[in-house]
Image (cartoon, rainbow, N blue to C red):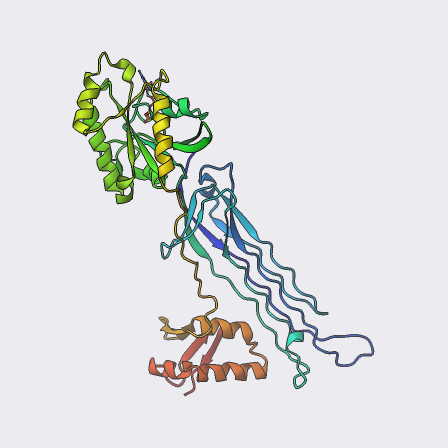
Length: 419
Ligand SMILES: Nc1nc2c(ncn2[C@@H]2O[C@H](COP(=O)(O)OP(=O)(O)OP(=O)(O)O)[C@@H](O)[C@H]2O)c(=O)[nH]1
Ligand SMILES: [Mg+2]
């Protein structure tokens, strides 16, 4: 089965918590702090699987989580880091953030690697907070929590040349005679159901040709096999537009030609603007040149005449393709936008009121406070209160209508508002 678009959920590992512990040993009273740091969470990394050509693996497996870091231990034991998670995708997979539609990565090369999300940092153990003034800190830092990210994976074939045309015009036959690919060929429409790729070795050059399912009128709106497969020729450098010149199916080659171009145009301006070579196939079925000349006249230019089945004219076709490719720019990976989770934000906050009238404060400032404050520690709690006041959170609550005695929730903590 073939699948070229998938939605998945990924989440790097959380950082492990730092712990509070004090050295204990026989005959040693009041040992110093020895709570270790938490380990870092595992990262989410995408890599290319060269042997894969579909996203089918993502049809059922949709949730990917890297391992969490372990909590620290006594005796300055650092928690174990979580293992990174490598997600394998076929070459040509474009990774987008679902929420924004931003392209985050294009797995364009055989060795493309993309670090999407770093694991959460481990929290510091209490041993790290010891100072000359504070010999016995009774607090530690929590591990950083990561957020799940929803992604769209889209497979966009990477090829130099795309074969397009009506069903049954001989596209797969052409691919089979110019490359070592062995696509299915048969005398009915929609033989090809998924894109086929073939590498053409022509003298000292190599180029990749993509054969896609046949297009019909309305393909760009979903008729036939729909426009889904046009995604696979969006990044070719050259289109080889194949027409059945024999008219054996009762259609006019020039009408076919116009219809296909119309579909390309309705799909995207980019596809419509790609350079095209027009190839007239099934010339073996013609009794004379009348049909070709009529076609060329309407087109206003010469076409390449071939018979794929007899493998004649294909050398001229490859000559022309190879010459045109020499002059065309290389395909480039898509432009990407850096993935911004806003994880370094430690200042912003928003206030919401839930249906029970509880005021909730969320945001980067709050995440930072939750990580750093252990509330059963008096010093820490004072710091928490002072930060809320200094950063204007108390005032903002007041301005949002919060009155004395109302409940305020910040992370796991609930308290009564005191003006
Ligand atoms: N006479 C003749 N028949 C051909 C030629 N090329 C292909 N055919 C036949 O046309 C039929 C369709 O060929 P395919 O290569 O499967 O056509 P396609 O364009 O890939 O078709 P779809 O995958 O359905 O879009 C097959 O029966 C081929 O044998 C040719 O040059 N001459
Ligand atoms: Mg085919």
